[in-house]
Image (tube, rainbow, N blue to C red; front, side):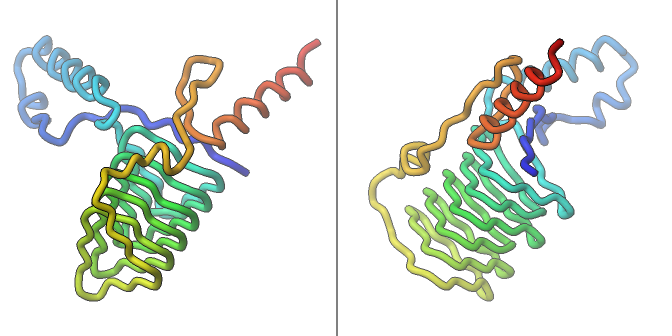
Length: 190
């Protein structure tokens, strides 16, 4: 079974919920929320998808935003900012501008900036421009420095795709889900 994640924009961390919560002016409250949402929608990098610890995704994840993995991904992951939490596991290649790992990666990592926290376990090669390794992090593979800017999209060969119904989905899993939905509609049509 394959899953397609649709990340909805989140309210930026720097927005003041307390100011909104205790505001006497209701129009001010809704205006502040609206401004926060529209501000986060302007830049796709502001979107944030979280994979919960009990979630297993089989297939590739491709996003122009941020992904936080606490569950398991069995496939490649390409995103701007990737955080793999202590319980997170990625079994596949990782591509990103900034990759922070506290969990486990079984596969290669290609990123401009790689941060391995003390609980990180990496079984695969790392291609990087900047690498930070905390005491206690474990690596089994080659580390290769790159002086030139890494074009993550070109290296991974994956780009976001638009679904027919107008909602966004990304990568190979989205294409399979779209074709499966089309097949299902064709079978149920009178």
